[in-house]
Image 1 (spheres, rainbow, N blue to C red):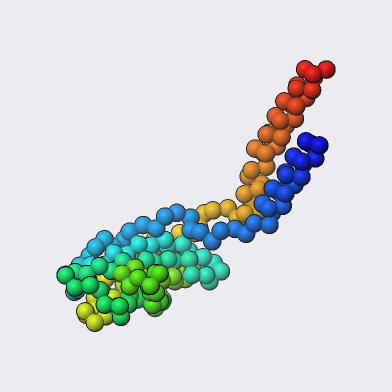
Image 2: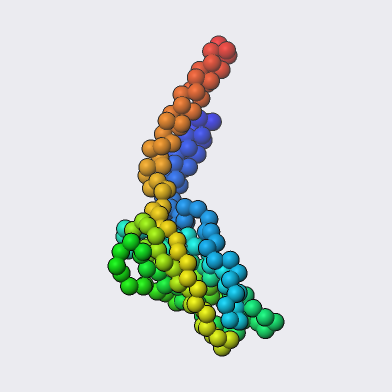
Length: 179
């Protein structure tokens, strides 16, 4: 009976792993490229995870943090626009209007397509009732280096095989001691 339960549990775990969808996560934590730079009535910080993609998905992720430069709070109408342009090619700026994260105007998010590795110019424009400010920086886009999910199983196969062989050997020893 025990053998059947463990086989059924193993089969269920295997089916769950095969049916699981890969998480849409970035390869590393975002990092800060602008740190509390004062411009007009704002202090602006920019965090980014600049992943390049070949499938035209928006892998270049940007988080704009807007803090008041003075005593007055940030008006709800304040919006950030993030623009990027590759520095190694002659292309115009591509831009996206950042959206507030969880309705918080002080944290805004935008995603843009970065279609190749290399340096990109980044321009952040914050505009609202308290005025406008434009900040420039640059980032280096890289491809996400995580292996695809099916390849992960190939990488894990030797470890699973060694564990299986070791477990089989331990069970044979236990049976030999009982007899």
